[in-house]
Length: 154
Image 1: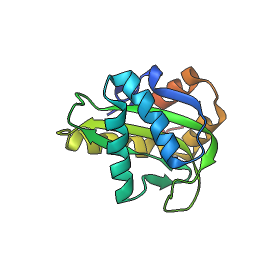
Image 2: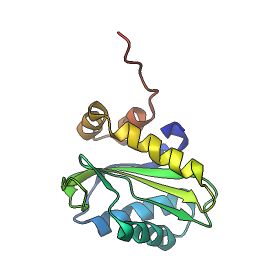
Image 3: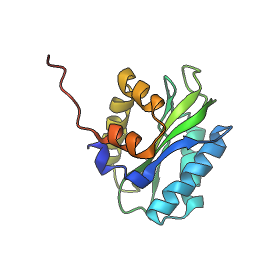
């Protein structure tokens, strides 16, 4: 599932100002609600409930908070580049400055897992994360996130 099927240009926050994980998730829930029409509180509650099971900070400054909602009709995401890294209780202890939030319908099943896997694959690439960290413009961030993967052939 390519990222351009998960995120829209409106779903990119180029400079999120947050001092803590909870604040970041609240701000991103507000953006997700604006994009989707879903209730902001329900989005936040789903994300926070998942976060209480264990941090979605996957390491190397990246977090992929996610949740499922019965009212959601499609899988969608919000990407944020933080102004300053924040503690996300990541396994490696590295503060997070790149967050890709994912919301899926309650019955998404395998599609939810495929979307998470694709996001993780893209954000595990150190060249990709370096490029994302260097950009300050929403449209440039969106273009990089949704570009077609390049082959490693010379």
